[in-house]
Length: 420
Image (tube, rainbow, N blue to C red; front, side, top):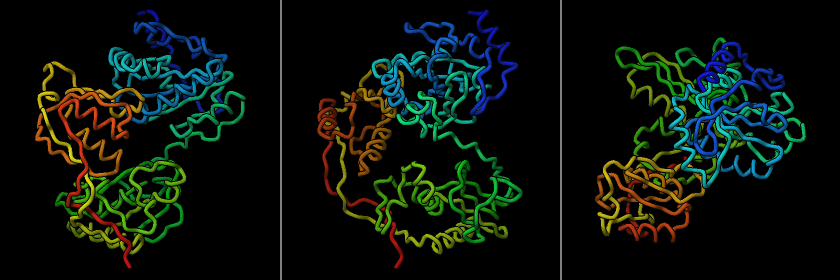
C-alpha cells in the first residue's frame, strides 16, 4: 500500500488539467488510486478496470448536502445501465475527509446505495480542477465527454453519452469576481449585460456565483452594496434584516406572481427569470442610510410592500408526553443524522438539538411547526423515511413521547404584497 501511495504522489506532480474533448492520458488509467473495497478495507483501484464503460467521476465531500442528495439518483441510473455506466465517487484529500470518515459515512448507507469509491485523492483533482462540489467529470472511449454540475446528471444525458452523442449540459466555467472591486468594471465578473438602471441592476449572468458584499470603512460607514446572483427573496431578506427571524412558512405572499419570490427553486429556467445582480455606489454614509437607498431602489423596480404583523393560521404544535423517551440515551452517543440525505431510508436523529428537526419539518411542509415540548437538551429519535407522510410521522412521534397536532395560532408573519 505504501508503494501505491508513493506512485500516486509521483504521478500527481505532472498531471495537467483536462477539459471537455481532451484525451485522458495513459498514466491516469494505470495510476493506483486509494479506494474502499466491499468489506470497507483499503485497496488500490485503476481506472482502466472500467475503460469500456462511461465513467462519471463524482467529486464530493461528506459535508456537501447537495452531493449526498444526488447519490440515490446516481445509483438508480447506474443500476439501469450496469453494463455501460460506472459512477466513481472521488473524495479529494483537500476536502479534509480522511479514509476512516468516508468509509464510516458510506457503510451506514449501503442499504440505499453503494459505489466504487476513491478517497484521499490528489491526482484526479489536479486533472479536473474545481472550487466547489458536487462536480462531475464524464469519460467515454478515452475522452472527457463532459464536465457538469448536478443539473447535468439526467437519464437523457447519460443515454446520449453511452451512445457517443454530445451531452447537452456541460458546466459553465466560473466567471472571476473580486468583491473588493466594482462589479462589471474592467472585466470584474465578466462582460456586463445591458444595465437596467445605473444603480446597477442586471439580469442573471451564467457562471457568476452568489455573493453579498458591503464596502465598509473604519468608521462603519458604507459606500457600496453588491448583491450578486441573488434571488428576489435573497435581496429582500438582506434589505429587511428582521426577516431573518421568520421561517419560510411565516412569509405570506399576497402577490400576483408568487413564483418570483420562491425561496427554494434552483432550476436554470427559474434562475434566468428571477435571479439578479444589484450594485449601488454612493458617498460614505451610515449603514441605515445605505439600507434606505437599497430599499428605495427595490421599491422602484420590484414594487413590493413589506408588512410585519400577526396572523391566525394553522400550525403544527409539538408537545411532550414523556420527555424521558427522547432525552435518555448514552452520553457517548455520537451526534449524527441522515435527515438531509434524501436516501429513502428511515431517519435516525441521534443526540441532536430538537430545533434542527422543527426547522426541517417547517421547510418540508412550508407550514409553521411550533415547539412546545419544553425540551432544551439534545434528543434521539427514530423517524419514518417519508417525513411528508403526516400520519406516519405523528404515529412515530407518539411512540417516542411526543404529540404533533394542528391548531390555529396567531403568530408573527411577514406579508409581502404588491403595491397598488
